Every structure is written in structure tokens, then in C-alpha cells.
Image 1: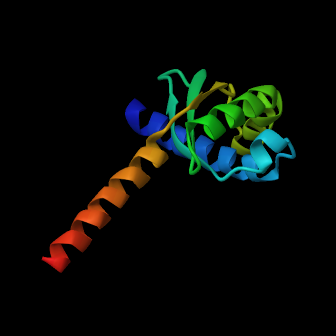
Image 2: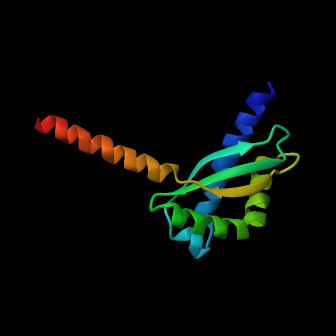
Image 3: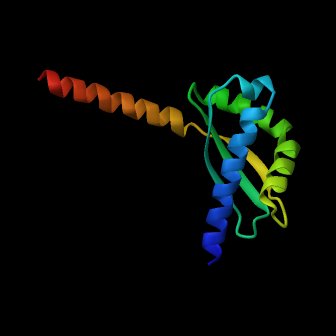
Length: 119
């Protein structure tokens, strides 16, 4: 039962953070194509790790994480007011390169299929 609650909370927090990131005016965040890969919430809902990835690479993701760290208070307040949680989790933003890695894999698969069709 508790697992379901944590999973639901992490998805809700992820959805709200995505909406809040779109509205941020910080140029470290605004000018990049960012993806919230996943949100890991602790079992007592007091901490949340937010994994951020960028289409243009890990460097942009790290820069965006710096911008998000400076806006953590605003983001936490907005998440708490929209989700009506008893205790809003402390947010920790982490740069992740999974989207970039996925794009590389897709290109490799795509290039191998093109070679197979030409054979």
C-alpha cells in the first residue's frame, strides 16, 4: 500500500515540476530543452531526487541543474501549494545523461538498419 502512495506522489511531483520548469525565467533553464527523467521520493515523502536530462548533452543538463538549485525554494513552494501535501519534500536536482545516451543508441540502431537494407 505504501509503495503505491510513493509511486503516485513521485508521478504527481514530476508532473508539477515539468509545468513549473516551463515557466521559469532563469536563462540557465529557459533556453534549454530539458526532460525530467524521473523523480525518486523517499518512503516518508520528505526527500525527492529529481533527475534532469537535456537533449543537447550533459553539460547543458548540469548548467540547468545549477539554475534549478537556485530556484529550489520557489519550485518546492509551488509543488506544495498545488499538491496539498502534508509535508512538501526537499528537492535535490541531479543531472542525468540518459536522454543523450538513448539518442546515441537510437542512431546506432538506425544506422545498422540502413546497412541491413542495403545488403
